[in-house]
Image (cartoon, rainbow, N blue to C red; front, side, top):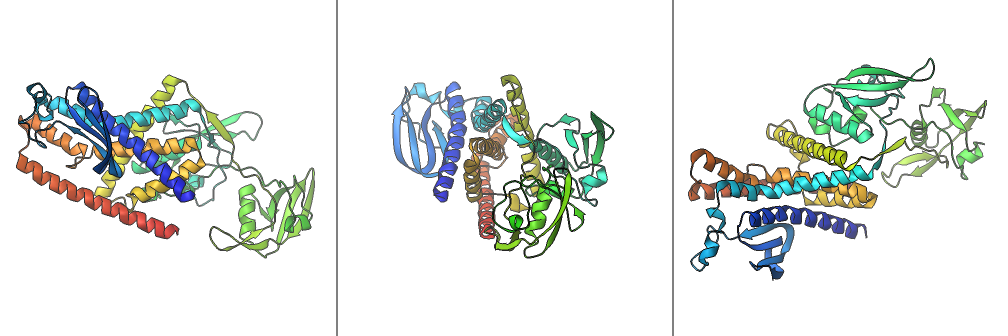
Length: 457
């Protein structure tokens, strides 16, 4: 069923993005007076179609489910001898260059508008996310060296306010790509009484490369979410119960080493299979010391032996739900779409000059995997995924590669500069070159997808 859910999530996402993209072309073509002959979802042979409207436009489903197209009345693709005179003026190449630009650009623009609407909807709905309260960092980490400490709450990065952890990750990712250090404003508890202390630190980011942005680069910097203290929850039959541990006990040290939080406690237990651990803790106002030996069990995910003592430990970070009014949500959605588009272009540029690995290029298999994963998490995650993929589709289509929308826009830009359309011979050569580039990118993406699949397996 997991494979079926993944395929359904993938094709729903792909179908939505293709329909929105092609509707952009279709609606602006109609607005400009161009006759549309066919609107197809999918490529290749048509397997179902119906005709509607004054122009009897054919609405079709085609056999290959990757992509789609809008076929307009175009002298480059068909003989116009039998076309009615009133339709000749509706032929695509007879339109002004600005109308042709509008029609071609409308597809990517539609993808950007979809992303803005999806983000706006999510911002209005409100999404529960961890607040940017920090866990204690290792002394050798960049976060500790910058002066960040356990309990600090990040309020702004480079002068821009942040409210949740995903915004911290996003802002720092942008700084890494810009090869600039980050100025971080924090609030921290006042050790002398009530209230908060405000502080600003500079976090050096030169230890993180662009290639590491897909992974947990925040952990490399020493940044982690604050977790609850190691307070024991439900005790089940096993080593914890046999050692006399009780619900509500707080573990403050193991083998004489202070325990930072519940996550540190769990990590220590997991790495101590079959080893005796000396626990020092608090039970109410009293202290206690017990010895416990974690059972050695096989971890289903990694296949390695790990330790367990059969006790629940709350690990969830502090959460917040931020919701905005319609205008603010649309504004934030537009800013997020713009920032994501700029970051995508920067990543592509760094790939071209060799600063970012081509391993970051993904294809349908990886996209399908992410679609399935986000759909299983919930609708909010799935819609966020859909928004990011819509932006990627819009940016990719604007690249100045013949065959793509951006290639056609490049032709029209040359036409504006020279005062005449590009020659058919030049167009044919450019189309072949563009097709070659596109095929090469598809092969790289397919190779990366297969390697990821084998590595995960």
